[in-house]
Amino acid sequence: MKTYHSNNFHKHTFCLWKEVSQTDFYFQQSQFKSKSGSEYFFTEEGVYRISNHWGRAANCRWRLLPLTDYKNQHTKIGFARWTDFYHNDEIANLFFIQVNWEQKTTDFYHKDMPFYDGKATLRNASETAKTLKKIKLILNDDTWAKYLEYEDLEELRIETVKKLI
Image 1 (spheres, rainbow, N blue to C red):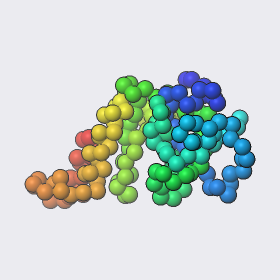
Image 2: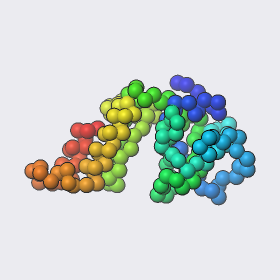
Image 3: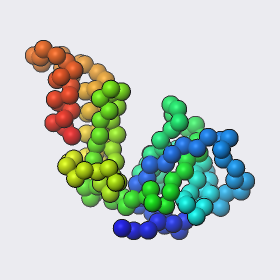
Image 4: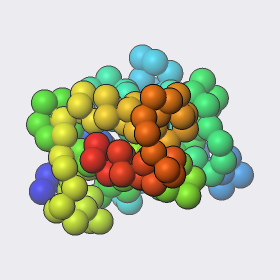
């Protein structure tokens, strides 16, 4: 597995950044500022990023795990350990999908993450995005089932989503 550090973490990587409270953040001067205005602070353990955009960043897929509800265009501070970065390739089948049935949410993860069980279907980035969009519609809307015959909508949702993932 590739080792990431301050010179290569920003090249074709996937990462789940954990939001850090502004009161817990103490760096004064960033070591790097991107063209889009994101600032980076490097430590031995990892990197802090101050940014108002998360998700797709250049050739990377960086998702922020927020402390509270989050909307893009709001500046947040995220931290990632060097071991939290994984290789990203737009055409390789690297991503799997998980669903939180209670909250009716879904997200994607990298196959090299420690909790991947080897059973979930792997997809490339584009197919993963398309499938997530379908799943979110099924979980949060019921117009898709308007012309179907069923006894229990929740059972139908679960059955349909399981087939998709």
